[in-house]
Length: 166
Image 1 (cartoon, rainbow, N blue to C red):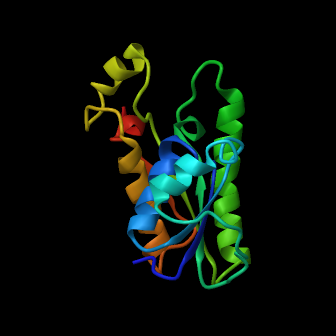
Image 2 (cartoon, rainbow, N blue to C red):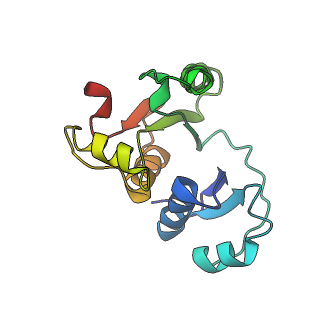
Protein backbone atom coordinates (compact mmCIF):
# COMPACT_ATOMS: atom_id res chain seq x y z
CA UNK A 1 0.00 0.00 0.00
CA UNK A 2 2.83 2.44 0.75
CA UNK A 3 5.44 1.17 -1.71
CA UNK A 4 7.80 3.95 -2.88
CA UNK A 5 6.14 6.41 -0.46
CA UNK A 6 8.39 8.52 1.77
CA UNK A 7 7.05 8.81 5.30
CA UNK A 8 8.39 11.30 7.83
CA UNK A 9 7.26 10.63 11.37
CA UNK A 10 7.87 13.40 13.87
CA UNK A 11 8.02 11.97 17.36
CA UNK A 12 8.44 8.41 16.19
CA UNK A 13 10.91 6.94 18.67
CA UNK A 14 8.23 5.51 20.98
CA UNK A 15 4.50 5.06 21.54
CA UNK A 16 2.07 5.77 18.71
CA UNK A 17 4.80 7.25 16.47
CA UNK A 18 6.91 4.10 16.66
CA UNK A 19 3.83 1.92 16.03
CA UNK A 20 3.03 4.02 12.92
CA UNK A 21 6.63 3.68 11.75
CA UNK A 22 6.52 -0.11 12.11
CA UNK A 23 3.19 -0.44 10.27
CA UNK A 24 4.24 1.97 7.52
CA UNK A 25 7.43 -0.03 7.03
CA UNK A 26 5.41 -3.30 6.91
CA UNK A 27 3.30 -1.72 4.16
CA UNK A 28 6.42 -0.87 2.12
CA UNK A 29 6.96 2.76 3.09
CA UNK A 30 10.36 4.45 3.29
CA UNK A 31 10.31 5.66 6.90
CA UNK A 32 12.29 8.52 8.40
CA UNK A 33 11.89 9.37 12.08
CA UNK A 34 12.48 12.84 13.53
CA UNK A 35 12.62 12.81 17.30
CA UNK A 36 14.67 14.18 20.17
CA UNK A 37 15.31 10.58 21.24
CA UNK A 38 15.95 9.22 17.73
CA UNK A 39 19.64 10.15 17.70
CA UNK A 40 20.30 8.28 20.94
CA UNK A 41 18.13 5.34 19.84
CA UNK A 42 19.10 5.17 16.14
CA UNK A 43 20.56 1.66 16.37
CA UNK A 44 17.39 0.38 18.05
CA UNK A 45 15.14 2.13 15.54
CA UNK A 46 17.04 0.84 12.50
CA UNK A 47 16.78 -2.66 13.96
CA UNK A 48 13.06 -2.26 14.69
CA UNK A 49 12.31 -0.85 11.26
CA UNK A 50 14.72 -3.27 9.50
CA UNK A 51 16.13 -0.56 7.29
CA UNK A 52 18.12 2.61 7.14
CA UNK A 53 17.01 5.90 8.61
CA UNK A 54 18.11 8.69 6.29
CA UNK A 55 17.00 12.15 5.22
CA UNK A 56 14.75 12.57 2.19
CA UNK A 57 13.02 15.48 0.49
CA UNK A 58 9.33 15.37 1.30
CA UNK A 59 8.14 18.17 -0.96
CA UNK A 60 5.74 16.23 -3.15
CA UNK A 61 2.17 17.31 -3.76
CA UNK A 62 1.01 13.77 -4.52
CA UNK A 63 1.31 12.42 -0.98
CA UNK A 64 -0.23 13.18 2.35
CA UNK A 65 0.40 14.76 5.71
CA UNK A 66 -1.16 13.21 8.80
CA UNK A 67 -1.17 15.39 11.91
CA UNK A 68 -1.93 14.37 15.49
CA UNK A 69 -4.40 16.08 17.81
CA UNK A 70 -6.11 14.42 20.76
CA UNK A 71 -9.13 14.02 22.98
CA UNK A 72 -8.43 17.29 24.84
CA UNK A 73 -9.58 19.18 21.74
CA UNK A 74 -13.16 18.10 22.44
CA UNK A 75 -13.26 16.91 26.05
CA UNK A 76 -12.20 19.53 28.56
CA UNK A 77 -10.16 18.34 31.53
CA UNK A 78 -8.97 20.40 34.49
CA UNK A 79 -5.35 21.36 33.97
CA UNK A 80 -5.40 20.59 30.23
CA UNK A 81 -6.26 24.01 28.78
CA UNK A 82 -3.02 24.21 26.82
CA UNK A 83 -3.64 20.80 25.27
CA UNK A 84 -7.21 21.83 24.41
CA UNK A 85 -5.93 24.86 22.53
CA UNK A 86 -3.18 22.91 20.73
CA UNK A 87 -5.48 20.05 19.70
CA UNK A 88 -8.22 22.38 18.46
CA UNK A 89 -5.70 24.48 16.54
CA UNK A 90 -4.18 21.36 14.96
CA UNK A 91 -7.60 20.25 13.70
CA UNK A 92 -8.28 23.71 12.24
CA UNK A 93 -4.81 23.77 10.66
CA UNK A 94 -5.57 20.41 9.07
CA UNK A 95 -8.64 21.76 7.31
CA UNK A 96 -6.86 24.96 6.20
CA UNK A 97 -3.83 23.07 4.85
CA UNK A 98 -6.08 20.58 3.05
CA UNK A 99 -7.42 23.50 1.01
CA UNK A 100 -4.13 25.38 0.62
CA UNK A 101 -1.90 22.41 -0.25
CA UNK A 102 -4.27 20.40 -2.47
CA UNK A 103 -3.79 18.02 -4.20
CA UNK A 104 -1.52 17.09 -1.26
CA UNK A 105 -3.88 15.47 1.24
CA UNK A 106 -3.84 16.67 4.87
CA UNK A 107 -5.65 14.79 7.65
CA UNK A 108 -5.47 14.40 11.41
CA UNK A 109 -5.70 11.44 13.77
CA UNK A 110 -7.19 12.27 17.16
CA UNK A 111 -6.41 9.43 19.55
CA UNK A 112 -8.08 9.11 22.90
CA UNK A 113 -6.42 7.37 25.82
CA UNK A 114 -3.69 4.97 24.71
CA UNK A 115 -2.33 2.24 26.99
CA UNK A 116 -0.50 2.17 29.28
CA UNK A 117 -2.17 4.74 31.52
CA UNK A 118 -2.81 5.09 35.22
CA UNK A 119 -5.18 2.72 37.00
CA UNK A 120 -7.69 5.60 37.27
CA UNK A 121 -7.71 6.08 33.47
CA UNK A 122 -7.95 2.31 32.89
CA UNK A 123 -11.01 2.16 35.17
CA UNK A 124 -12.54 5.16 33.34
CA UNK A 125 -12.03 3.35 30.02
CA UNK A 126 -14.39 0.63 31.28
CA UNK A 127 -17.23 3.14 30.71
CA UNK A 128 -16.42 3.67 27.01
CA UNK A 129 -18.73 2.09 24.40
CA UNK A 130 -15.66 -0.01 23.45
CA UNK A 131 -14.52 -0.54 27.05
CA UNK A 132 -10.73 -0.53 26.93
CA UNK A 133 -7.78 1.75 26.28
CA UNK A 134 -6.52 1.92 22.72
CA UNK A 135 -3.29 0.16 21.85
CA UNK A 136 -0.60 1.97 19.90
CA UNK A 137 -1.45 -0.34 16.98
CA UNK A 138 -5.12 0.77 17.11
CA UNK A 139 -3.95 4.35 16.61
CA UNK A 140 -1.30 3.40 14.03
CA UNK A 141 -3.91 1.72 11.81
CA UNK A 142 -5.76 5.06 11.60
CA UNK A 143 -2.61 6.79 10.34
CA UNK A 144 -2.01 4.09 7.72
CA UNK A 145 -5.63 4.38 6.58
CA UNK A 146 -5.32 8.14 6.11
CA UNK A 147 -1.94 7.78 4.37
CA UNK A 148 -3.28 5.29 1.85
CA UNK A 149 -6.77 6.54 1.00
CA UNK A 150 -6.33 8.82 -2.03
CA UNK A 151 -9.67 10.61 -1.64
CA UNK A 152 -9.69 11.67 2.01
CA UNK A 153 -8.50 15.15 2.97
CA UNK A 154 -9.32 17.68 5.67
CA UNK A 155 -10.59 14.92 7.95
CA UNK A 156 -10.11 14.32 11.66
CA UNK A 157 -10.24 10.58 12.38
CA UNK A 158 -11.12 9.97 16.03
CA UNK A 159 -9.69 6.79 17.57
CA UNK A 160 -11.04 6.71 21.11
CA UNK A 161 -13.35 3.72 21.52
CA UNK A 162 -16.27 6.14 21.86
CA UNK A 163 -14.80 8.06 24.84
CA UNK A 164 -16.01 11.38 23.39
CA UNK A 165 -19.59 10.07 23.39
CA UNK A 166 -19.92 9.71 27.16
